[in-house]
Length: 131
Image (cartoon, rainbow, N blue to C red; front, side, top):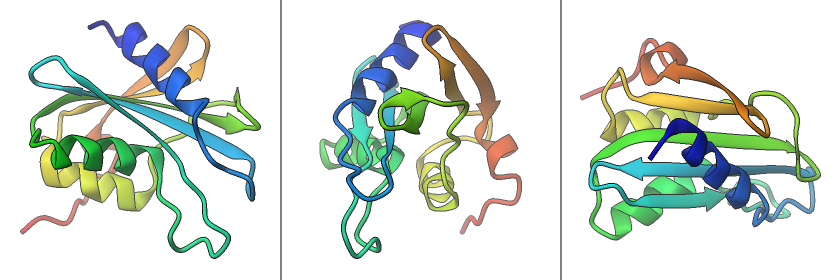
């Protein structure tokens, strides 16, 4: 799967977000080592604390299906369903990714219909907590 194809899946996942409070919709597409893709979207809650991000939704779906080896992540986000610049994973999502991914794990931040920025996990979380 190409980077652009994975970004398109993140854009598609963004359409399924449940964000009635902030209006910010986010989609993620997580490519596994065996070539499968697990998608996720953000799901808000009125009390905010139970809200879950798109990236963690994708990771948790994969792990709950027995998959723990990932090769790339794409994230798309914006206000009211329209991509509006790069939406990097929050700190909690970065830490969850660190549990399963290497420091050089690629994270693609969708910036438009056919554009993205490419980072490594260590660039996004340079001082990751590890046991």
